[in-house]
Length: 159
Image (tube, rainbow, N blue to C red; front, side):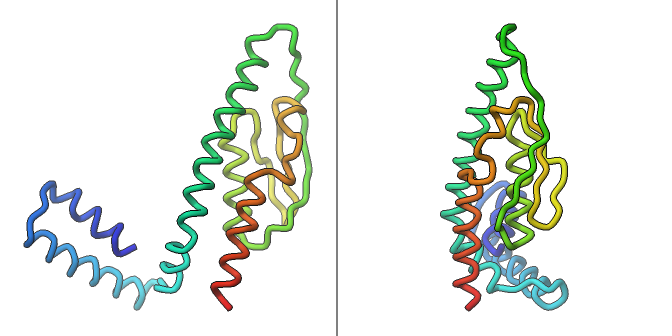
């Protein structure tokens, strides 16, 4: 978070000088101190996020790849008059434990064209799909595997 605040400081200043960098370091440190003291921010969370960053980058690229694949499927459905979509509501259970992982999975499903997360209750997801083909293998998708790996690393880090 420190580097993010410092980066925003540099971008807003428009140039990089020694004085601007020194003031930026001071202001960034003061903001981090304020966040830790009054907003419940924790530096341990920052380190966890730093440790999870390779997985988050990989998750982002997998998401982009899945969005492109789903766009192609939806485009085929739209442009082929002989293909009749079969909309469906799909229910599936997942063993993700953290709210953040469930939120990331729900948002990833919604960002993928042709699917929308309708509801999430405990570990049960309800997803509307433009076609049944888009719903195949959703419960053991690449997203779920990466999120499980993130949860496992987080669990190890907290111990």
